[in-house]
Image 1 (cartoon, rainbow, N blue to C red):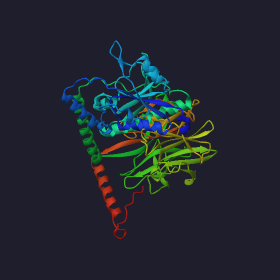
Image 2: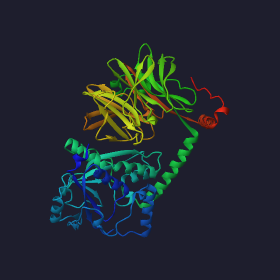
Image 3: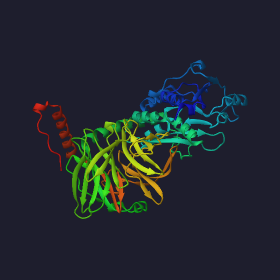
Image 4: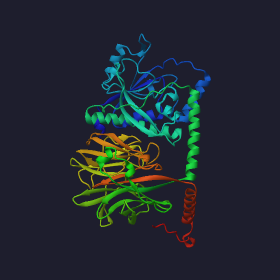
Length: 564
């Protein structure tokens, strides 16, 4: 999209007795950089409720521990309209109930400015303000007042696995506010400040994302169900104590896990079609294949063929090096399984997720190798992978999945430098080998529970279904099956219809993050935790390997073999 498409758009920024935090400034600057014009609307601050000094101090501590203080630029003691131009000042009246309101004269004054919407940064939206702009007032959910009143801060206090934040449209009547865009972020295992920084960095781009949707589709996004509930009233001391304790526990558990827990993966094979999975067929029927030797695992399986034997492409990873792409042949998977591995592709950089795409009898593979900042498409031929083209040069794409739909090629992926576990990006092209264009609404989805790709897109019953990772508790915790409801060059919508949790596979399973179907075969990968001596041993061997790699070549000992 070009600046010319936004040059005729004018929006308002309502400021009530304070300056803008850093992320709020960014949200405005992104709109202005796109070409939209800004009008600042100033209003004097309401008389603050007098609070004891100790409460004010503890609230500042809450904001500091939660990472909100890092976003603050202080308060404006006296309004200075000369600082931001163009601008206007509104003096608020009060309704009979004591709610803030603007007079009819002032409402007409703002209405004459021809605003598309008003981005609101204050305590309570004055009556009459939503009617002053074509698309009303937009505000971030509860993004004013005490730190404890932010919805994600309350989620951190209650130690939720996932916390949410949103942008909503405030209506003039008594209808509930309309949620325009919501982001869902993993809090489990993350420190308070890291979670807040991630949320606010993403949120700063949401007004522009919604405005792009308006320009492209001549209307607001479809109404979303808000998960940003207004937090219950909690005293500031309880919130402060909970946040401090949470950070301490996160730090301790992280250190213990680093020393005593080792993550490993294996493959699982089942006789099951996609419709049976949706109907609730038990995943306990899946047969888990034998694990590799210590420090090595197989994950990210994609089915190449099911006859004469089950053949896959998968990530072949060692704790003492980087991942590579291997061909996996599984003989007698439901009896006494025998697994054969043969390396097809390796690089100095880590490789994984060998996504497959078939066209006109040819089989193509698009593995992830984001550290090389290349998205190289390979052609698979009798166990060999030959490079064809770099589809998106310079982009650090992750878990890329190709689909051909209604005359266009589509590429679903994350970007390693744009929160790839949370954000989903789309690219489209008329040709497979080049000409890929980023979707104008990128990222098209912000949800830790169902964004990152987790296998080939499935056609069933005339619909498209996209497996995605649920990283709400940890990376690769589970799977979400999304039904794609709308896929065009101006819009993307999908709905989660089914979820796979690790305990559905096995009691000791800790994660599932890839799903592939062919004929009547279903293949998954499953995560397990090794606890005790094995993690200590592997980490010791890793350290030895790092020391060995730093030695001069003349005295470097022979590298140990890790082949199967």
